[in-house]
Image 1 (tube, rainbow, N blue to C red):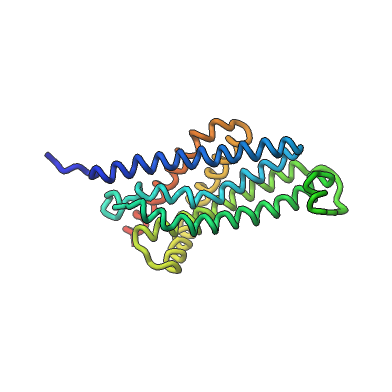
Image 2 (image 1 turned 135 degrees about the vertical axis):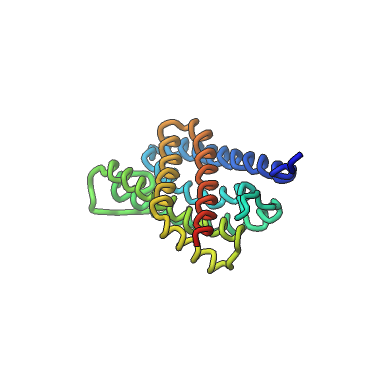
Length: 238
């Protein structure tokens, strides 16, 4: 009989990985619903899209649990130990959380200046502006564009360097340089994945919230595995 392609421990890691992705999805969904509830209570519903865009910044953290799905250059699953994952989660959490806080601070300022100058947030943070008028549509458009930018940055400086480090490990600087080089060479593919990520996060959370529980983990797994395969194919052509 031919030898099994994936050893039992590899198959087990894959199932754990899928389970952790779904768990992370539930956590993001729960946080989003709590935020939406309190925003509605203070009549700040329009701000919700800014939080949804900010959630994209956590994708590099969620993608860490997908590393058991990585294929190496021989087309086999990488040996993976979840202890390695736990060792890296702390640092990534701190960086991602700080990025999220910085963005939310800016989002509050933008909302108070261009959407509702008399809002609760404008009064609390004492934001005063001469601008008058409702620019809700422009605010939504800006957040959609920013969500795509967040998704692009998350893929290029978050997902790709950690993926490359698992396969080759050129060092911290080398992994980032390789990630940027790969993204530049495959800019349309990476840009398309970023757009798909932004749409996957924003549209379900804004208009069909329970769909997010299904669409987000599936799309994230597909994008991660496709990036893995595209990177390996690019390495073979060099």
